[in-house]
Image 1 (tube, one colour):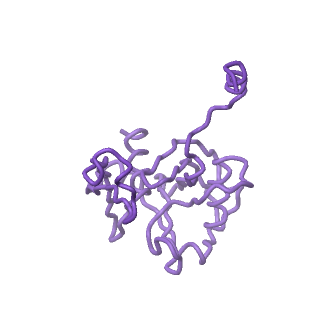
Image 2: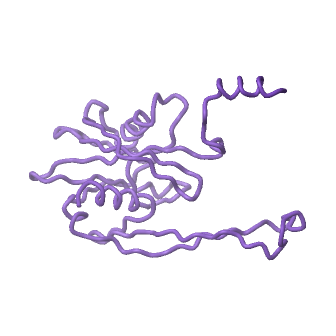
Length: 205
């Protein structure tokens, strides 16, 4: 291959995110409902029979499927499936942002509003229960913060002899903040709390 041939390929090439084939892409919906003239956020408690994170509090959402036209479509579809709600009851869906997790995930986040006459029929295979929290609570309440140290731990047969400084190589480490909201005996934490905190800081302060 010569320079001309390589240049032609580069001109025709569509830039992409290197390593994206190893990233898992998810989409979630922050559903708002109105109660007594006040906006509330709706949360799910994951079914206690689920293999991953049973009993944890989350927003409706899940993995983006190949059949989904977009991340927005995935968020609405997941909310529809998990909450047993009519798609027509989910209105005014707006993109908020994309969260990049240090654990190989991206989470596209959307904000939507449920009609006053919406009817919930949560899927028991995925949802233990649903509850709402006044938006004002999060506006007035800062989450507790705790730190997780994310470290690199090579496997036992890692070829240290192939890298400079061998076993003395200084692997990069990082700190990761976890946030905790306490509301009426419930604890909202993890990615849900991280998205929630970002939303409050960007939109409400």
